[in-house]
Structure formats: C-alpha cells, structure tokens
Length: 122
Image (cartoon, rainbow, N blue to C red; front, side, top):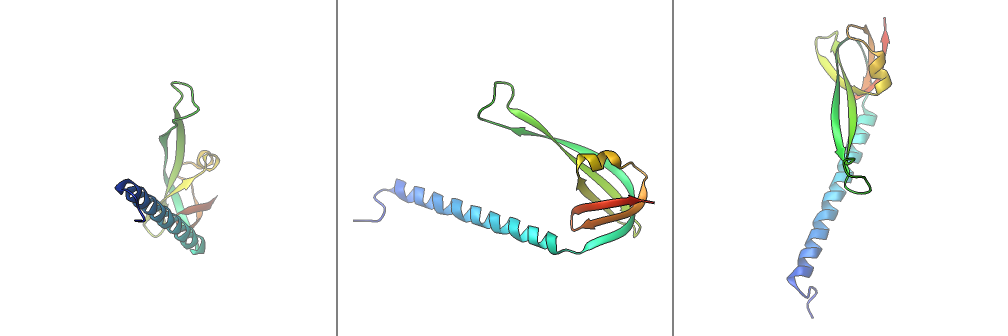
C-alpha cells in the first residue's frame, strides 16, 4: 500500500510542507532582526529636524464587518533628522511624538538601529 493514495494527497502534503517552511523561515527572520536591533548600540548625535510626514494606509477586513466598512485607515508617522555629520535618518515615531516635534528643532537625537528613542531640544 503506497504512502500517498493519490496525487491529491501528495499535493496537499507538499503544500503543507512548503507552508510550514515559509512560516518557519519568517519566524526565524523576524526573531533575528529583532535581536540584531536589540543588540545595536544606542547612538546619540546632534541633529536638526528637517522633515515630517504621515503615511496613510488602509487595512482591509473580509469578515465580521458591515457592508462599506471593510477598510480601516492606519496612519504611520515619520520624522527625518539632518545629522551634524552631514547625513540624514528617517525614523518612525508615535503620534504624540510626531505632534510634539516641529521642523527646524535642533538638539540631541537618540536612536538604536532604526528605532527612535528620543529627542531633546536645545
């Protein structure tokens, strides 16, 4: 008696193995990225806030929503700092931080990898 009784059984088994492999690699990738960011040194530099932007995205839902209520707006806030060394860095921030910061502010920026830690004005 063969292990797979039909080609359909084989297809299902291959699909499940492929899905498990993709899921496993995704989990490993996210965990490795998190560890790398967590282990990165905190960098403190003099900087000036050069730009702010808010990016709107829509998250679509399929179930448990009334007709016409399938999209939910999500806003992500970014600030760009001009570093004293001549470079620039764009970091994602929360809404309260975004509202508190104004273009042209100068001070000390603290960040870790791509994570905003804080900004102290002069």
